Image (cartoon, rainbow, N blue to C red):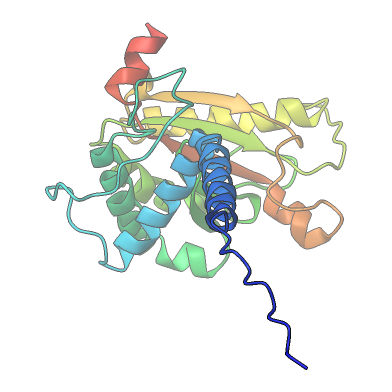
Length: 252
């Protein structure tokens, strides 16, 4: 009995379609990721980049501002500004980092005692003068013993070109005294008194100063604890980084 021969199967010439389909799927996924990445909030990325650069510059990792490889920061979305526009001018970032170092050295004692704090904020360098070191409770008069500290700060800032915004802040405990009917009035009075001290005693240019009161509505810490409320009772000196040329043109 003879064995039957199995019919020879014809080669499948369409197997390439499987690889092609996989390639198309991967390509589609790649473009989806690229599109999603392009929608990132450019202003937030710029702020993050500024904070990273300042932190690494303190460690001596980033090159000096003369180097062309220094990090550039993105500002508002591209429909508001031309591509590659910086949030801050690179030289101003470097100067703020140096200013941070200088103030940290000048205020080393106050920082250790918890009377002063330094941090980089959204608009520039923030010097927080806490109530415990500069004001009596419920008063807007700057303590006489704290004036040497204020003088050291003024000497560091007086020769620069930065604008300084003085902000008064309180905790959320209501106040009602013969002088102040609310925390709004107390916070504004403290900011104004600090500005007056800068101008009258330390010859600070009035054109570079502004004062504002925010009461309890911009807390630095939760008001649920005594420690948090103590951190919120403060006057912030915000050393504002100048805008880039492109931002200045938009504001005109």
